[in-house]
Image (cartoon, rainbow, N blue to C red; front, side):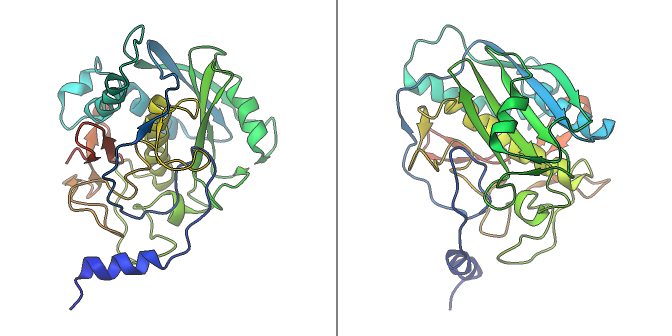
Amino acid sequence: METTKMYFFKIFLLISVFQLSFATRRLNELVKDQTQLLHYHNGPLLSGKIPINLIWYGQFKPTQKAIISDFVTSLSSSSPAHSTQPSVATWWETTKKYSDLSKRKLPSPLSLSLGKQILDDKYSLGKSLTHEQLVELASKGDQQNAINVVLTSADVAVERFCMSRCGTHGGKNYKFVYIWVGNSETQCPGQCAWPFHNPIYGPQSTPLVAPNNDVGVDGMVINLASLLAGTATNPFGNGYYQGPAEAPLEAASACPGVYGKGAYPGYAGNLLLDSSSGASYNAQGANGRKYLLPALYDPSTSSCSTLV
């Protein structure tokens, strides 16, 4: 008799998978055995002190901004939150193994910090954005040695958002890199905010309680975390990845759907539970925040690494 895991796996194999463009956070949450090391394509990796500038496009509540800005702050190993384990900073340390493995002589290790916060709550480019407009918005941040993150609110439609991607990252002229992540709460939470919402396909189980009680923004944190890992290890499309450059598997997307040990299709894994709220999480950060972060591919063990 087939086991439950094998049954779910066969169901997922029958599901149509979206066609994806370069460096997008994938919509499908298949759990795959990634035993092959992500190949290094000899391109530059990020190094030195780099600020993460947040560009808020549309309407965000102060509490929503705090959830994401606290996450960014928590990435630094110098953050006081690093002492509380499992921590966001410990999760991020896996990305440093890629630069060590590359044997490139980097000027200094990559160190991230929260940079500027730019507000565009008047929808200067309208409520329907193209990819080119996302890059235009990203250019409002620093033009060199920066990661500029465009965050679009729940009422903003973005080209191919929900159809084939939840967010994306890329680089501009080897000067700065950018990330875009959208709030999917009202448009496609089953695609871009799983496991805090029932998936659009596959086994239907009770959604997890979001650690910050905001399905859309907690989902954005997952996608932002995945794309930051891809940005650090494959900033300009010629770093670490597996598969075609147009739809690569990167540090986080090589471990889709895995958040804790024991994960399988439709099940995020064994996670920590907040006794007061019932929320699921696997990392702690600044100001007592709790987050759910995706597993990262560990190049030293050729396996998906989880915090719990």
